[in-house]
Image (cartoon, rainbow, N blue to C red; front, side, top):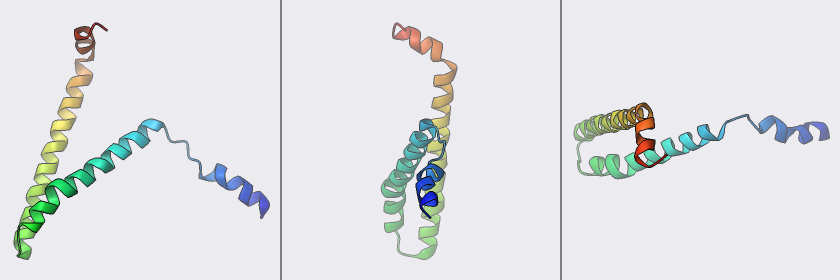
Length: 90
């Protein structure tokens, strides 16, 4: 039993790169912000079930638009990285 207990920390430590943890944390924070700042007010503004369902669907469209904008900005930064670093004297 002691051998199993002594190997437990090694078995639980996964080889996860720090970037994945940071991106996962940022994604979780973004989803929580979406739920708290966009979805919750949209749902609380309506009383009927079909109105809440419609507000949820429209809020998901807003989420999709935000994701598309974020990906587009990220791709533009990666594509023009050399030009961006030249602007700042890099």
